[in-house]
Image (cartoon, rainbow, N blue to C red):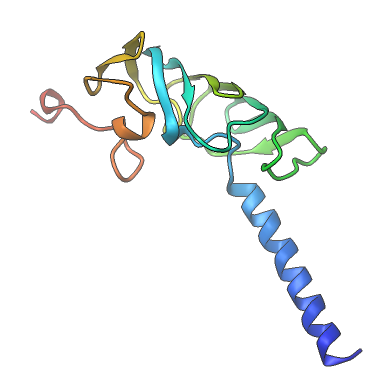
Length: 155
């Protein structure tokens, strides 16, 4: 083989490996961009403010084993095309679920985790852990992905 074909083969293998590594880390929904509409403790519903909201996706999990489906043009393929099992460490939740259809997202986890933080919201007004209107999940979490602690919790 010529040097050009070896470079092409190396690029092709590297590209495919990076695709599988990305697939293992990516989630179909970026929770940071969900605006809370209603939330009670470890369950919430909201609007997905992302350019990637076209389509539908979902996952349900018990401990670290999730079953997922995804019908979004920009999402990577799952093991069985548009669905499949996946091991994921989501913060030690015993049970978690998430469904997304276009801009609408429903999420829940017991106990709460980094994707479904503890929150209280009603009709777009978030009361806990941060007061505000149309608050994104990313805004109620700290920069490291942890929950924002209130002043009372620090005392």
